[in-house]
Amino acid sequence: MKKAYLTTPIYYSSGKPHLGHAYTTILADVVAKYKKAIGYDIFFTTGMDEHGQKIFDVAKKLKKNVKEMLDDNAKIFQNLWKKLGINYNFFTRTTSQDHKKTVQKIFSQLYKKKYIYKGVWTSYYCPNCEENYTETQAIKKKGKLFCKLGHELVFKNEPSFFLKTSQFQKWIEKYFHDHNSFIYPSFRAKELINNFLNEGLKDLSISRKTLCWGVPIKEDNNHVIYVWFDALLNYLTNLGYGTKKNQNFTKYWNDGRSEIIHFMSKEISRFHCIYWPIMLKMLNLRLPNKIIIHGWIINNNEKMSKSKGNVIDPWQYINRFGSDALRYFLVKESNFENDFNFTDKFFWDVYNHDLANNYGNVLTRIAGMIKKYCHNVVPSLTKKKLDNDDKEILIVRKEILKKYKNLINNYKIKELLDEIQKSYLLLNKYIDETKPWVLFKDGKLDKLFNFLNIIFNFNCDLIILLSPILQQTTKKISQILNLVLDFKLLNKDHAKLKINSCPPIFNRK
Ligand code: MSP
Image (cartoon, rainbow, N blue to C red; front, side):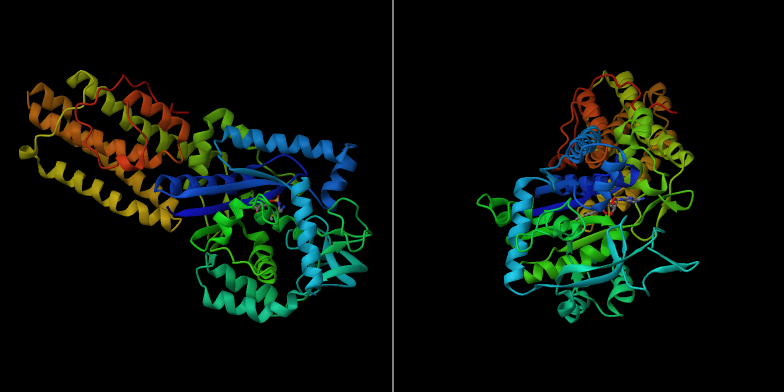
């Protein structure tokens, strides 16, 4: 059996989840569900990044006990994932004892191997993104330095432990060069080379002396581990790496046949594509197969982020349109090349056009006709009497069935949705042009039954193909149609199936 380990970033526990977090988590969940549907054994993880200066500062500002704030926020994220139908196998919390112990163990291991050494950290630092900048990488405005997201940088000069990342510069460059499917889309690799590798990779400071909210370093308890070193290791600790309960690690990481895929947006590609592979190389572990990087959701031309206060609350859309509509919208508009500008109108349009007018409408029309002309029983096909328009529909059905696995295997879910959408437009046209109500009136029942059989079967395939995205709705439909939502049942003839009456599925808004 094929298997895969899929991950989202672990989100900072400094506030509530917003649409950006939902975007990545839904994309990863949808890919996990599609892969499962075509036969993969999946391990899927998400969770919370609970250490670092920012988290500590937020708790202080809110006058909250840090641990209590983290517990509250973890619950808020988990509630949202539950509502959105996200099925993770493990939910990381970096303050858990298991995670912290393994992080300390790894730190000691790399210290012994001399990949970690003590020095002095002089750098410009963004406390918000928890990221180092050199003077050339920083953005200069009115004599001050800012990170790429516009936060002011602070100058740091303190003792620190360093990871010898500079030693692996050539190796990582060669890795990018030899594995051009490692980073998706591949132009992101060029960006990373231009922005971070060309000017020389420096050793990475991986401890903080002035902070108490982090994993303590055993080798010197005046220091805690830098949040990114700690956070990246969640991808191993989720699987029990470094403990006795490491079966999942053996199965989903160590076994070269398992596909390892990380999802995220572009601003954290530097950590995942440069530092993370180097850490794995130091630990003699295999690298992930793919790092999938999408663009940002922007709101009024600015990245949506908590610090800018322009975040969109996913609940606003879930409450008005339902979870499935939000899942559908974010997958349909997913963009790996560019950012996409979110607007309310855009959401309404996609909902009304795709979900209400196409998917919902075609289904209620078909179910209504089967009720009216066939007493709710799907008619059989009379092969001899197929006309060209019927044959054309069968060809289109075959084509999508030929394509879908390839699209899923290449993470082209948006393209799969485009194919589905095209099919629905065609089915609507097929109904309008065939005029089944005239066929019935004229007594042309052979032609009418052929039409109903063909259109019902095709629609069942489309419903099954949509089920990893429109989970709750397709489940409801499956009960109405007595249809099993299983990819193995694609291309089936459902003749003689007894269906129930079908109420409107997506109400126009
Ligand atoms: N804690 C780190 C990640 C550590 S992973 C080992 C972090 N957390 S975060 O809360 O800032 O979340 C960043 C991730 O949230 C992005 O990579 C992306 O997946 C998602 N998004 C946050 N804002 C986003 C947008 N405006 N648009 C799209 N996705 C965004 O970084």
